[in-house]
Length: 114
Image (cartoon, rainbow, N blue to C red):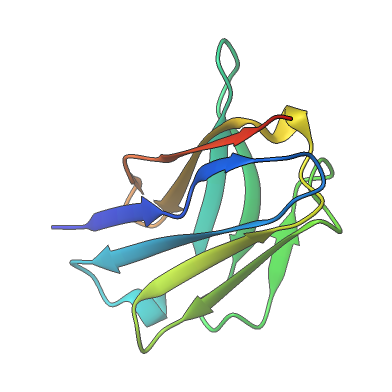
């Protein structure tokens, strides 16, 4: 069965950086696009990044464009989200998603605060 396990969240000061990882199993990872989403308290889940199966094409929400970068290592069945210039409004639980299967991970908390 499809499993997605995120890691790398934590507490960071405004302007700082974090790199999230999502380890995937249970499907042929290198054949499918992946997405990152986030959900802040009291808000709807927001999709922030999409990456195609090869990693050659990405797309981002306007709120993170120019600051976040999605990448993947198909040999390691892992997708990443590099987050730079973090802002307090980036505070949320971040999830990875395999849209083809409708699967989400359990999430990792990112808190941006001084």
